[in-house]
Length: 80
Image 1 (cartoon, one colour):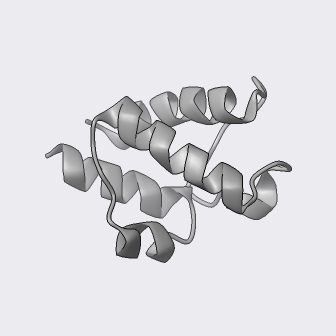
Image 2 (cartoon, rainbow, N blue to C red):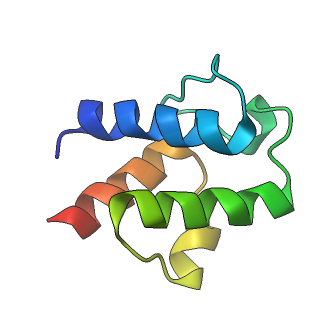
Image 3 (cartoon, one colour):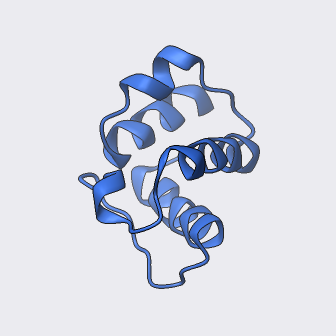
């Protein structure tokens, strides 16, 4: 899976979780960039991403990701 493919699919997941079709994530996107991205929505987002990509993050991975770019790296790593 390429980074571009992951970003395209992540856009769809983020748009669905936050119910906002205008969301387009980048490497630098963080919770501060999306109005409703709080701690509860973060859990919903992680679960939605895990389900969409059929992967599982461990707690250390979830807490260590600082932005969407790091999330993309983890997704690609897990899909290999």
